[in-house]
Image (cartoon, rainbow over all chains, first blue to last red; front, top):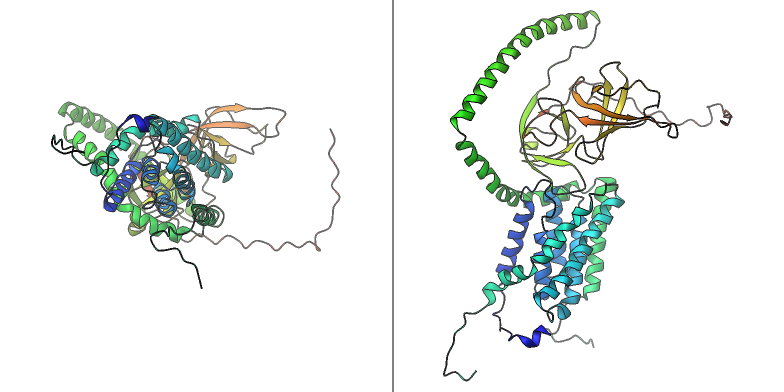
Length: 173
Length: 303
């Protein structure tokens, strides 16, 4: 397993302000005018999944639910639709967080893909139940691209927690 | 004696319990929003939270637009100027006839003792962005309740009907396009005055006219305009043009597909029309009187 092949870096403790900042940036990305562009990844879902997997004690279902409400209000979607899906997404991520981190980044991305697709499918089910039309299969392309972005997201979001590598020949460890 | 774990072990309720709590809250909100429209005040508070984020998110594209506008070449401006002048000339001649027609119309209406139509107040608004929601066709405009926009007002562009204001925030308003699946527009055919209702197709270039009899007098390229009987849209605004008619004997209604007239997906500037004042209130719904109605046996149809 990849976990044993690579040396593990000891990370600095996370800054709660940084978590909040990344969520706000992801919201900004989602609220940008994308028009009908298919396959734009849901950055908020990705960032929420990331923090649920890496910091399940700082991030959880309640916060994901609230961020989902803001997404609903900002997008003019059905109120509660994103909140519903993100609550399930956060639950899945928190439940799987011990398991996911043992895999290599691309295998992690496969897990994340399933989580993102499930949350999108939930939203689709909710909207179809309230009488919307099926938006086409390209609707799910966003999840695929989101999962592909997982390694990059991991690198960027963990950046402030990495300490600079200091090589000291005389230090025993 | 209660056994509480030491505080450094406590993690609050189990994830499943939290999930249940928040999911039921979300479902409650969804039902309130979809069925009863009670969630508008909650949505307004949340929209107020999202508003600064939206403005910041829109800044790059607005900045790009402004920069691109600054660097528009003089040739392009000159060309546009010439075109506008030509159009102005054409419009001027039309305007003269229009004045005459308007006077004539006013006189005829007075003769017919019809109520004179007052030109409605209107607000020019700009489309900020299209909602990210892939299930509906809505746009957000940059005027809200502070500028006097109200839910239910009609939104038009220079060609025809774009949609209707469905939700109003202090500085923004949400317009549901005529192409949205939930949107209906009362129309009539210009050629023969046949009234119908246009349903949004939920897709980009599609509107359908439903519940029109198979033998109704509808032809391809018929122009459908607002009938105005709803009191929301002023009469005579182009809505769409019939593109395809399928008359299938198996279905009792014709399937009529139309192309929207207005640039529902192109224009940035739209006009929000104020509601017409002084319309008589709709009559109260008659109480169902089951006893007084004579019971009639309907003959069963057989073919």
